[in-house]
Length: 255
Ligand SMILES: Nc1ncnc2c1ncn2[C@@H]1O[C@H](COP(=O)(O)OP(=O)(O)O)[C@@H](O)[C@H]1O
Ligand SMILES: [Mg+2]
Image (tube, rainbow, N blue to C red; front, top):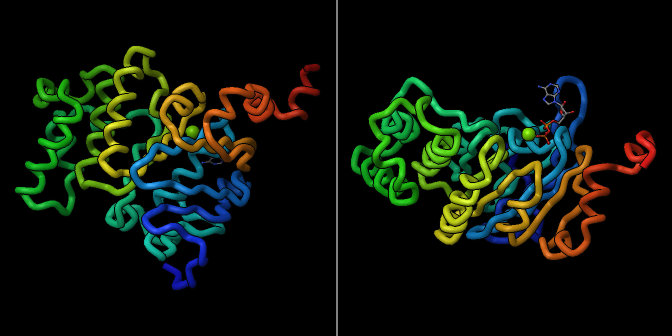
């Protein structure tokens, strides 16, 4: 980890991404991404398929080391720390595609996510996450692979919450889930944020982002093309249209 001097304008308690460049293969897929994630609020990161959202998430989570840039929390730059250390610092990530350990029971999925907690803390954490997802209570002894997609997403979020993170990064919360299930997740995400956790919600489509977020970033071809409140995006669909269909693409298809 670097011992850089923190920029003077960092906000206390916020997670701030500066100038993040992610390289996948040989190609830079994000260009100087800047994100400010508030504690106790939902911040959304939206953008078309291939915009660079997941690459950004992998950079924040320490799964792929950023080629350039800084990830500031509590005056420290976390770039260069591995995924376990970043989790220990309080940033938990729910990867794309509600990945659970399918053969393990729901309870065991929660237990494997309790690394570093004492037995007492683990029991308390399981109770805490089950209070948030009561429908998992009756599924505790079932293999997670037998659950519906929505319930698997609940297990994945519950796993991330076991260690009481300060920030929760969820890559494609609604992907592949029926709208009725997404609707059930909405109040839960709100509750998580209300408990003080800063949520970064990554969504390809903006509906959920606009419903939940106090601040929205839209990524377009690896760069942030919108950074502002959700209201403006709701009122001016052209902003989103441009972000999802850049002018060069529109010309190519004759729009
Ligand atoms: N492992 C990889 N190797 C090479 N290129 C990748 C890899 N993963 C993603 N990419 C490329 O990076 C770009 C951004 O992808 P990604 O971050 O997954 O975007 P999003 O999550 O917004 O759909 C895309 O052009 C994609 O093809
Ligand atoms: Mg993605």
